[in-house]
Amino acid sequence: MISVVLLGAGNVASHLYRAFKESANIDVLQWYSRSIDKISSYANDTHITDHLNDLKQADIYLLAVSDDAISKLSEKLPFDNRLVAHCSGSASIHDLDKKHQRAVFYPLQSFSKDADLTFSEIPICIEVLEKPNLKILQELASSLHCKTYKINTEQRQTLHLSAVFVNNFVNQLYRVAHEISDAKSINFDILKPLILETARKVQYMSPYMAQTGPAKRNDKKTIKRHLKLLENEQHKAIYELLTASIKKTHGQR
Amino acid sequence: MISVVLLGAGNVASHLYRAFKESANIDVLQWYSRSIDKISSYANDTHITDHLNDLKQADIYLLAVSDDAISKLSEKLPFDNRLVAHCSGSASIHDLDKKHQRAVFYPLQSFSKDADLTFSEIPICIEVLEKPNLKILQELASSLHCKTYKINTEQRQTLHLSAVFVNNFVNQLYRVAHEISDAKSINFDILKPLILETARKVQYMSPYMAQTGPAKRNDKKTIKRHLKLLENEQHKAIYELLTASIKKTHGQR
Ligand SMILES: NC(=O)c1ccc[n+]([C@@H]2O[C@H](COP(=O)([O-])OP(=O)(O)OC[C@H]3O[C@@H](n4cnc5c(N)ncnc54)[C@H](OP(=O)(O)O)[C@@H]3O)[C@@H](O)[C@H]2O)c1
Ligand SMILES: NC(=O)c1ccc[n+]([C@@H]2O[C@H](COP(=O)([O-])OP(=O)(O)OC[C@H]3O[C@@H](n4cnc5c(N)ncnc54)[C@H](OP(=O)(O)O)[C@@H]3O)[C@@H](O)[C@H]2O)c1
Image (cartoon, rainbow over all chains, first blue to last red; front, top):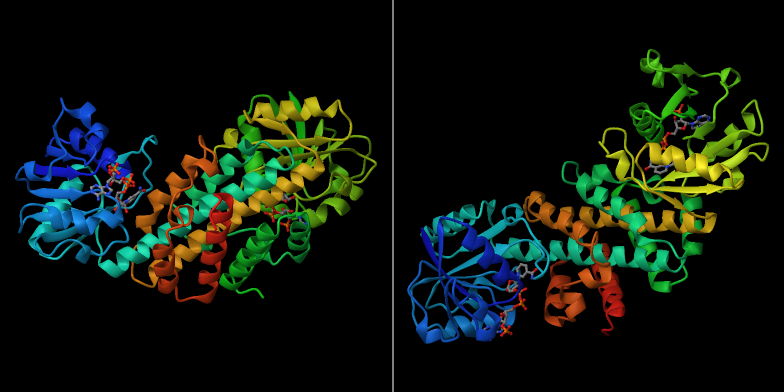
């Protein structure tokens, strides 16, 4: 049984809390939020508090707070030499005050409060400064049935950057397609199966192998017609840049 | 019962053939391929031929051949005034020889021969010149349990362009992430759940609502650090352009 004190009440903390409660191997000793109203509805399920001085003794203190708050909050924790981990993809492990045994427990997924997630599908990237803590964090993750990956700071920051490409930027391409099709009164629903299939394909095939289309074939006629169809200059620029990128990857010029 | 003669033996034709054979309401009278060896293994299941002069009389002739071949092949068909449809997202309905009753039966999905697809999830975009043919093509699609959409040429070409964004360009962003993470010996598998979740999210939420991340928040510190991490000039350009696009969409500057 691993005892956890959870700090923060945002997207990540809410999902973690639910997942922790479902695990027989994890005891959420206490939930801290500086705004107590955010967690007051859980008062019957766990100990809640908005006072750092009331924090109980636990195996792990998990800081699921905004990146900017990690440093100050870890400093204000009224104890030392205990295991304290943050959940950020980009904050350094050294943002945690050095009086603690420092670690990172980074769930690589996009969390929003309303969206349902299968927690067991989320990869957990773990980093520790004191080696024995690796096992505790791995056990915490495996109690959630998650796969774990030992990742150093540079790798984690590169992962976070890669996540921006496959999540934020990909989503923006969906948005551009939405704009383009809306302008011609086309139902965006028509594109949804293709969106899913594109993501599914790279689950078992490399993106290199999965590529198709006019840019890869260097089909100049189609590319020219597409550029003519695009009215928005920024959409045109995106089309040109990604076409050039595909050509470079696949050895066209 | 709808009788079909299928022409072509590539990605789309192969998937269509399998889907047609599973439907109780569709009779594949004949399968034509100019290279007979591509379909000879089906000789026991249907009539196969590589001779246009042998084509049987059917309700629909479906041309699932390369875009460039549509015009010439339709011209060479040794009959007239029958229903002939092509499957292309970009070819005009007028590419079909005008001696035929012309139509388009465009399945909006990315087909490759090996990938398994649930055909019933594929939207079929239909265009006809002679109105009564609309019903036949809708019946053909609904015999495959597919949703149909009536789409004109301009809309279809815009859809094809949108498909390039959500399929080819999105896949290239996966590729860029693969390159970036590979360079730091990070297992690409870690990103796969996020890739799927990003596609799943827009199945029930608009891409606008689904957006998160540093560009949307205008988190200048993170954006700057990411740009510093990127070593490849083209990756940097993609990062900058898509960040600008997200900012524009979400009213940041
Ligand atoms: N969202 C994701 O997709 C995702 C994915 C992986 C990792 N992460 C990481 O997980 C952590 C939390 O992210 P999130 O998305 O859950 O953020 P969030 O929804 O914005 O929630 C942030 C939480 O931090 C609290 N907080 C902010 N400043 C604080 C301070 N000075 N002292 C105490 N609490 C403070 C907030 O409290 P108030 O409500 O009182 O302001 C809120 O409970 C971040 O490190 C983030 O990088 C996020
Ligand atoms: N692939 C997709 O994801 C997709 C999605 C939606 C729509 N489409 C459309 O579906 C159609 C077929 O695409 P595909 O991906 O199946 O292409 P493909 O795999 O390249 O197959 C093309 C087929 O056309 C045949 N062909 C080419 N030139 C011909 C000619 N002059 N006479 C007779 N047959 C000829 C080829 O025969 P040989 O094998 O003898 O060369 C081959 O069987 C195209 O209009 C395409 O735009 C494709």
